[in-house]
Length: 268
Image 1 (spheres, rainbow, N blue to C red):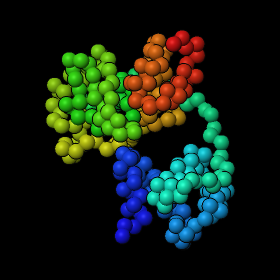
Image 2: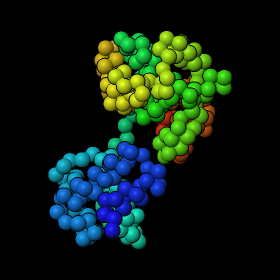
Image 3: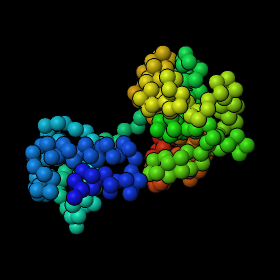
Image 4: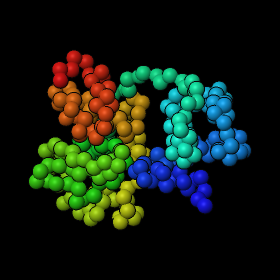
């Protein structure tokens, strides 16, 4: 008989959840089990409610972290243990509504210019120029670039969906120069030590942090700041919201509309 852990993994696999979601959801259930030292199918709604109180009061988790725990535990009880519903009254902390410290065009250019390695500069340029998530950036293969139609194929982005992203002319020219200089084979940005493997997400994040520090940029935010910058700059240029939604790969238009609130006097 399958263990509950394997049943949960299987349930996530058939729904096409990302590796990161797998890890986060499993971690939430493991933490719940360790807290009570009892199998999860022996816990009650009151037990779960008390666990979330512990996360807020004792662990001081943020609202985002608490919601991640909630989603993982709710998925487990509904999809694995087959609870008819998850009517557990849990008071989660309110999500703070903050506008991130958005990078200006000049700051993006400074960060890219601060890259000592031209490969890293091209990687960050591609991330910004196409508004990519870091997981999408490191997964680009040379064959994903359609130079004739100026399109980048993003395979299995968030939500396990493929999409086509327009490549600006200046970026396409840069990518051609990059390919002529380095001749990458399978991966556009391969691991320097193991060329047959993709660059890791951690390396891409570290590259951005190093370049930002070298450029003297002190605004808060990691490599995802380039995606935020891309979105707001595109809206400032007059790109319609529905087109930006397709570029970013948002399933829900409301995810894209938040950028409109960050662009004063947007006329879309």
